[in-house]
Image 1: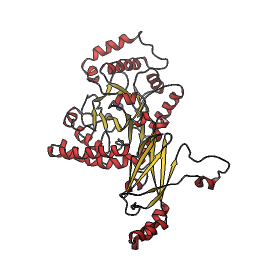
Image 2 (image 1 turned 180 degrees about the vertical axis):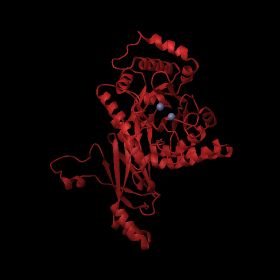
Image 3 (image 1 turned 180 degrees about the horizontal axis):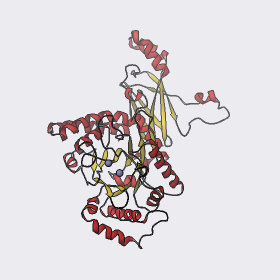
Image 4 (image 1 turned 30 degrees about the vertical axis):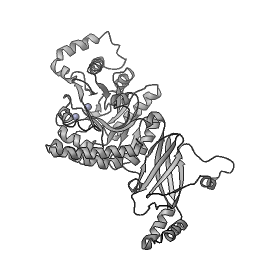
Length: 458
Ligand SMILES: [Zn+2]
Ligand SMILES: [Zn+2]
């Protein structure tokens, strides 16, 4: 996920996420050779809210008055840092513009008997122009939640994917994923071994899963995440029992008009079995074009979502932009008519090697509480992220969380991915048998945690 500008690499802003409407302290430190904070020197700071304007709209307001009306705060640097205190009102992104003046620089040089010498012009230009950094103020319900990057639909060589669960998992950590579920076709919990080997990684989670298929009624696919056992196995081991139980649903279940009865009843049976297995049923890729037609007829997709035959909708996933667009449009249309449906974005990746299509293109950003991943999806605390290579990142879902996610994409994920990449490299070696890498993984994971704690002020 791409950074907004180099400034997020040149400065640390701790914390970058702030509780709204409370007196807060933000510490800014330069990692840049050009714009540094000099002890005792004064800096001018303007806090610019993106949503609720701080500029009073009275009769004096004009285009030029806008900036004039902005309150300038002055802070003195200490220990190479600038410590800002401010009450960030409302839930929104804030731009923090920091600058100083040539006069102050002159004064600083005189007072300290130093000269910035030949590089001076550069310092002065930079400090006069100023820098703009961002923070985000949040209301308590989102503030207390932990941000997780997730993918709930992944294939490995246990079915038609290319890499082992080991390599797949390592490559996901490299890209900054925190929670993944490997959901092979017809195979349950392909990541069981890996999960056992990585159970010391407290900040990274593998959830058992499978993509349930039913070869009998058209192409029924449903992703089963977090179940205790395989629903696929029932299809494979006891086809006659399944057939009889589906037959018995006739009469009990009302089949909506316009959809295939047999397929619908199989969907009812499958959903009920997923719930029995303790799993979470995610409805994937209805507009994936398969054998010339959509994977699922739109009438059926509507029936599945309206009648609760899934727990969440894979809003984006393993599809072309057009196919994903259709899914997004269907979701918003149904929502307009009152449907409340949790969403995820999943890659449906079949390979994680460099340049792979799908991998890391569609993902979920989840706002998790108390480690309850499914509860967070189900409670609507997720957005789907589309990150097609070479294009700007798009976020879909609830407006509030989508806006916050854009801030996180620009300021958080890109920087954190660098440390996650380091961890993932050693996860890969560790899973290939180099047990000495365990301590390095722990050290990397500690740094990731530290970065998160500083960013979110924990
Ligand atoms: Zn596949
Ligand atoms: Zn599928």
